[in-house]
Image (cartoon, rainbow, N blue to C red; front, side, top):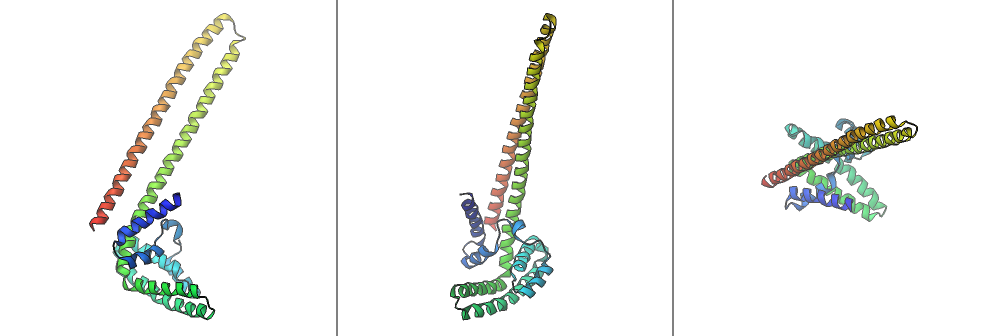
Length: 244
């Protein structure tokens, strides 16, 4: 269920950005990544290009170029040339592979390569539009990544605090049991004084527990406030995208 919801969310954002341009959407639905920091190679673009020229697989280099172009709008024209250059090298490599699989009778594979060739031609013709959409798409994905990372960190802090609270309660409980056991061997006056001490300890423990409870409630309120701020930010960015 979660996977389907994520895929639907990604599709919704990409469709929103492509608007009524079905061909642009079809091409970018193949090239955009929900988790770009995980999916796109960490290698330098020049290294990926060199590897592609040897292997004939230009996909990692194309992915990297689109992602870098989205993150560096001030170098837009340079990346347009880079992506077009990669597309021009990808097409003959795919055409050669298509001829090979056609001879082998692999019609499905040949048809897929044919669609890939058309996508590369489209990418070369509409490079600027692709970069524009990729910039907005990846900007939103990276913002969401940061929000998710911070949310996970807060969740981990909350779990640690709960574990610490449980441990503190267990220590206090053990202390009470130990004092109760020790009173059995005390004299009357000692027992009376020990009971007074127990009450003071119980009161202090209760106050500490209430303080921890208030801290937990404040953390929950802060989590709610943060969620509202993030939601407002998402709505504002969505409104801005629709206005452009």
